[in-house]
Image 1 (cartoon, rainbow, N blue to C red):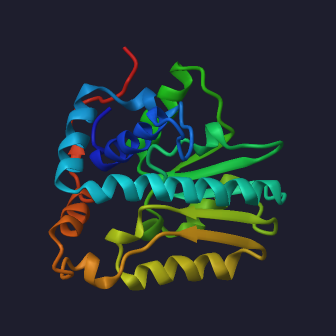
Image 2 (image 1 turned 135 degrees about the horizontal axis):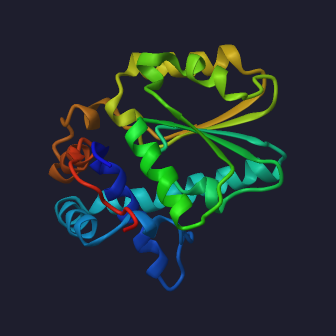
Length: 223
């Protein structure tokens, strides 16, 4: 598998580290299936240059895990994850009749699906390859058998840093105009952070690591 965004593996490495803590913020035993010595080395280099990035990713994982769990407990059975990367929630946070829909590029989703199957990890998820900005979020979701009239929770994690404000608003408007009952969680950065004008080098390094180039050979695949 080629051209999988390297950032997905770095985020996965940072998330996986929390499992080793005495009192972990969360437990993610699935994420390790995509990791190896190469991803560990690269993540270590990035963490050294921008230590805040690793802690931020762990904290946001805990926050979004809790919000998602509460939505499922409240009866929500449709979960849409935008730019899902190597998100593992469909495998580790579920409930009766809960269905996940994940949107990302084809290479990432194919690697994800094949590796989960190889490890016999079950996840009630429908994968939608595509770009929710260029292809249109609603156009991508319509063939997925998603019920637009039913309560739906949208999780938009780690995406908006690299998206123009007008595009973020456009995505939000699409959701608002097409779903009768929805909840949405997303993280965002100030314009100064995105423009690298805060004056703090570690923050600039974090934004730079968010644009990590695609890997050119398989990582985390099962031999």
